[in-house]
Structure formats: structure tokens, C-alpha cells
Image (tube, rainbow, N blue to C red; front, side):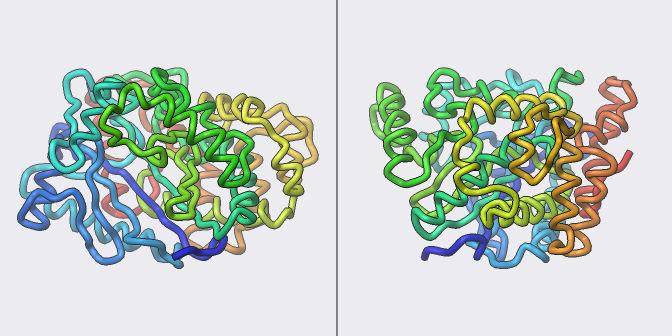
Length: 407
């Protein structure tokens, strides 16, 4: 079934399984599935929410079970499933942790691929890309799926999403620590995303999708080069271009949707769904040409947008955008502005359209910073393993209570 713009939504959230006492990752999603169903399965239909395995055997994905029309109460439904999963995991000494990356994981030693259904696909990915690195095995994100009915709606939605993508890490960054160290990037997950498929660059492109605004353009400029590049590796033709396309927003013409993939997972579903709701309202205004015309949005080359994305990945909400023409796209008349203030400007425009809970969550993020900023504040420059685990245990508590994290 096809849907019109913003008629329905799909949200996907990825969580890691950890030892409740030590905080170490535990490759036991198959055990979770067995605790739930009595057997090892790749998917669990749990009413409004579905559980699925991922490439890494310690990551479980929770997602809307088909398109949903209601974002307003969705975080509560996700939270109910998190409570259930944590209850099941308690019997084997495990629990769920949020954020986009485990701060202490050693992927060379701890990475394990899912060994059950679809394992031939994962094994092929591993042969091509060597999935032991952080960029494959230590990443959790939120994906937002938004529908389009035809090429006319695809053009509008793709144009709007391309414009918004570069600054989204400034709202959602939650991966400031890898290998027990604070790196040079507030969004380490997205920094790794830029290069983790460097063997076949056609798959990721510049992360910002090219200027393609119809199915035929997309097929010729994005899908066909991907298929040609993967062919020497995929002799049995088990990989499919919709899944191979790894840009920061991918067009799923098989289900008439665009999937946004640049968002780090937050500390709780309330934060994730609030961010999703905020993004939806911004995109509605962009599609409606509230701030800029469709033609103005379409004229931006991915190289120009990629420069802004890099700033966002490095400094999150504190990145300052010195590009007046880009700011004009959002109705901002200024020579430069921080990403935090861009989102404050947009929040003023759309906050009345959000639920009170979602508006409060966004207000907290805009006041206290991205989750990366709040994590580093809580760490207080003490990167001992003991202190890092203490902070992340507290973030795990925020997940269990569906509350935003403040140090």
C-alpha cells in the first residue's frame, strides 16, 4: 500500500546487550529471542513493535510493526518493549544499553556476527568490508522512514531531507567516546559511517544523496553504479541495491519511502521519538516551501552539503555554519549561526505542533546540549574505565525509566 507525505511513519531503534554488572557487550540476541519465543528467530512480532536481529550479534532492533499514523504515544510503546526485554534479560544477567556506540568495546576481540537466518548476507559483508571495526560492529542508530506516493512527492521530500541532513548530527550526536577515549568528533558513529565502506565508495557516496528527484534519475545515478560495483564481490547475487545503498538518506522505492539514517540513538525512546517528531515538523515546513522554494532546495550539490555535515559530525550543536545561502533555506537572515541556534529558530516555528512531552524533550536538548555533550559533562574529564561505566550505567537507568539523561 502506498501512502502520501507524512501520512504514516516508521521508526527503528537499535540497542546493545551488555552484562548488567560489568557493562561489557554480550553477543546474545539469539538468547533473547529464545527467551521470548522458545526458539532462535530473527524477528518477533510483539504487537505494535517488532524485534529483529542485526549484523552484530549483540545488537537488537526495535521497530514499528508496519507503518504507524501516530508518533504521539510511540515512545511509550517502545518503552513497554524495553521494560519487557530487560525483564527477560535479567534471568541471564544482561540488560539493554542505549547510545550510538559502546565507549569501551574492543571490536577486534568482541565482535560476533549473527549466525542464524540471513547469515550468508552478513558473512558476505564481512568478507568484503571486515566488519570487526567500530563502524560496523559498534553502532546503534535511529532510522526514520517517511512515505511518498509518486515522483512528484518524492521530489519534494528528497529535496527537503537533503537540505536538513547535514545538521542532524548536531541534534542527535551520542557517540563521543570510543576505546575509552574522547575523540576529535562528537559524533564518532557518523565519522566512521563516512569511510566504513571505502572498498566500494559507490555505496555511500558523499553520504548526502546526489541531486536526483525521480525514480529514473535515482536508478541511473545511484542504483546502477552500486550494482556494477558490487557485482565482482557478489557472485551469487544475494545482495540487493536497496540495502546496499548506504547514503545518509536512502530511497526505498520497493516500499515508497525515504529512510533517514544519520541519527545516533538517544538515551531513551522519549528522546528519539521527540527528535523524530521535531524533524517531521521541520520537513513539513520545507516541503511546504515555508522558508525556501523547492527550486532553491534542489540546487544544492552534495559537495556543499557534505562540508556542513562534516562540521556537524565534528562539533555537533556547537558547529558554526558560515554559509548565508544555506541559512536562508531555513528563513534565517544571518552571515553565520551555530547549529544549536538554527534548531532553536526552527523549534520556535514548530514547537506548538509537538506534544507537550516531545516539546519538553527538545527544549532540554537545546538547553543542555546533545547527548554527546551531556555525556562528556558527566565524565568530567575522568576517562577511567570505572568512571565511564558509572556514567553509562546511569544512562542505562535513563533508558529503563524513559527519562532524558542529565549529569
